[in-house]
Length: 104
Image (tube, rainbow, N blue to C red):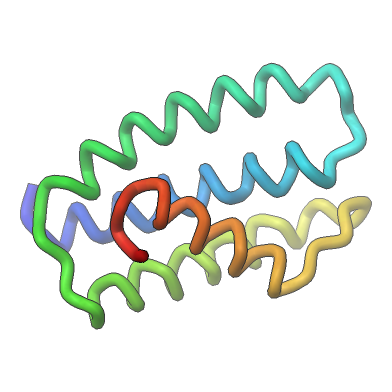
């Protein structure tokens, strides 16, 4: 995959990990916790592989982060019963990117 395609894919998978983390911490469905944890694990493996395919400069990292945040904000609009702030979203994305060793 070329770098642009990897960036686009990485944005989505980072967003999905962050969404699952948010739903795990703020969701109300106890029966969904195992499923969410399994999804985080599976997406993380995919994201780590993709994050290591290229060397990322600060501008690219910032773009991936912003696109992931925008993706999450649009996605979470349908979850009216879960209160999520922009700070929660930012924290989940930064945490995920740190786990992938993309940011310090």
